[in-house]
Each structure stands twice: as C-alpha cells, then as structure tokens.
Length: 323
Image 1 (cartoon, rainbow, N blue to C red):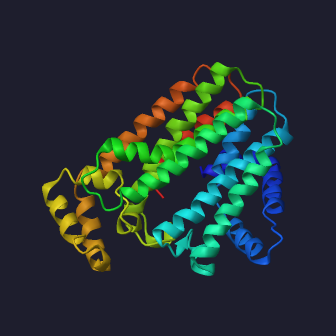
Image 2: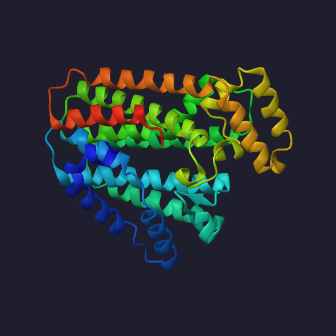
C-alpha cells in the first residue's frame, strides 16, 4: 500500500488546505509571488497538515481552525526548505531546480522570510496562549537546529547524541507540534495532547532516520538529487556515524573528505559501496524501528477510530519505507 492510500479519505480537507496555501503566498511583488508559487508547485507529501487533521479528528474537529494550523505549519516547513537549500548550495529538490538555483541566494532568503512572515500572520488569527507558546518555542528550536547543522558540517567526530538532537530540531519537532496543535484547537485533553506530541516526535525521528538511510540506498532518480548528497554537503547522518565504527570505512571517509571541495563522483560511489558493506544501514533501520514502536505505544490507549488507525498505518508505512 502506498502512503496516500492510508489517508485518502482526507483528500477533500487536504484540497482545501492546498488552495489556502496558494492564496496565502500570493505576494504583491511579482518575484516573491513567482518564487513562492514555484516552491509550492514543486509538491511535497504535506505530512504536517495530515498530522494536524488526524489529531484534530480525535477531538472536536472544526475545519477552519484546523486549516489555519495546518497551513501555518506547512508554511514554516516550506520556509526552512528554502533556507536549507541556500545554506547547502543545493540546486535540486524533489528533482526540480531549487528557488536558490532559479532566483539566486538573495531572492531565496527573502522568499523564505516572506513565507515565514505569512505563517506568523496566519496563526495570529487563533486566540490561544498555549498554542502560540508552543508554536513560538518550536520555531526557536528549529532555528537553533539550523545553526547546529551548519556548525556540525564535516565534523566527523560528532556523537550520536549530537545527531539525534539535530534531527529532532530539523524534522521531529514540526511533526510533534503538528500533532499537538491539531489536538489543542480540537479541545483534546492536555494529557492526550501531550501523548500526541510524543507520537509525532517519535514518528518524526524515525522518518528522518529513514530519509538519511535512503540517501545512500536509493537511486539519484528516486531521490531527485545525487545519492549520498547529504554527506557530500557535509551532513553527517546516522548511517555514516554507525559506518565509522568500521575502521576501514572510517579511514576512507576521512581520506575522501581531506579536500572536501574536490570530492569526485567516483570517490563518493566507492564510499557508498563500502558503507553498504558495513552493518550501518541495518543498525540505522533498527533505531528507526525503536522510535516507531515507541510512537505506537503512546497512542495505544486512544479509543478505536479511523483517525487512530491512520496514525498507526502511517507509522507502520514509515517503518517499511525503502524508497
């Protein structure tokens, strides 16, 4: 089963959210409008809005409030993607040219800032202090995570703890916040809202670990960017950290990146082949599965419902994802 089939019944609500996203990013300035629209049209799984919808369905579901939260969180995610591509000097995302590639660094940065500002404007319509506090704290941590990612580039001596903290801020926090904000605006109890936050956090950690694995195990066509691109950009992910426990791979890795600005495609290909010969990929999947089991445990007590089953199905799908 493909992931979209698990939440196909949400299509109507997702279409409304998608339409709202298009309306909100229509800037007066033609370049900002064009760049923002280009980014939105590049597609995406809309994972965060989906989690907002599902969490909201566990309480008193009101589409207008849910839509506001879903749109806001997707805009935040979009803004971070634009900024990431500038920092990483990335030319492709999902197989299409990045905003940075199409318009240059300056326009890309201002586009990201514009989308962030629109997100803040959107969420301001909801009068809920708890919601705003969580939302603001999440943005702060996401920004701190971006700085940490820059500082950790090409740092082959970082720890597993460094990596886990980084992906928490890079991916898991926005998914966790999506779950909790959907619960808050739907009147779910504080205890259950916190459980949904934990579910989102664990799913988000697993999701990012799987993404980091696929960077080495998928083809360039499947990824929409070169295989091993994260490592080439200096991002040390879980498979690399586990792979470095192998002396031979550790040595080759450090030799390959001794002159990081002149790493050849054939060098990366040889490095990826050697990584796959270690236990790194298997160990990474094991840690991903551990997070998923925790995610399933946190929502186990919720009454049976279509929304709950979909949350279970999504977690299960993520664990089995191989492309």
